[in-house]
Amino acid sequence: VGSKKINGLSLDDATLYIEEFLSEELINPKVELSLIQTRPITISIIGEISRPGVYKLNTNTSDLPSLISSIEKAGGLSKEADLSKIYLKRRLPGQELKYKKTSLNLKKLIFEGDLTQNPFLFDGDIITIAKAKKPDNDQLKISSSSLSPDVITVNFIGEIQNPGSLNLSPNS
Image: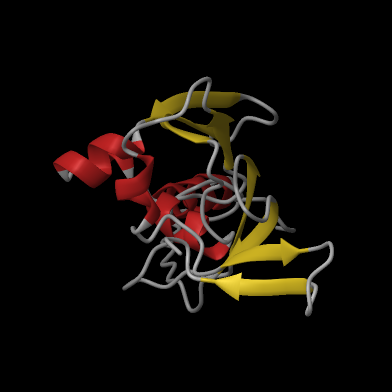
């Protein structure tokens, strides 16, 4: 019967697709699919983040990658990040280069506990973190959350005894 692509289909949808395809050759095809191992997903995170770029996130059934875990992996938000303007762009299943975009507000997650602002991520997701137009008074409260980097680097230059870089905690 050859090979068929089932990219973007759930296990149930893939089962139906294969059974339908096999019904042209067999009288009563029954297919049973099971997932042996998940593969990592690849996401892109850009904008006001410490280390923007493309990341591979491991997936398993007990710990699916989320927006927050991707921000932590990318080193945390920059001090100029607008937490009320986080954009998630997701490719629509079964359609090449068609995306759906949604905006997320991490302030609602941090201050109100709104977990809908921390969605699970899928392969090919693009996260964009906008730059704040004006300083945010809540930034100090957020700087001690898991969204900030573990350390900040301060560079000392000029007429001092030991010029160079020093790693400090974020609220130093």
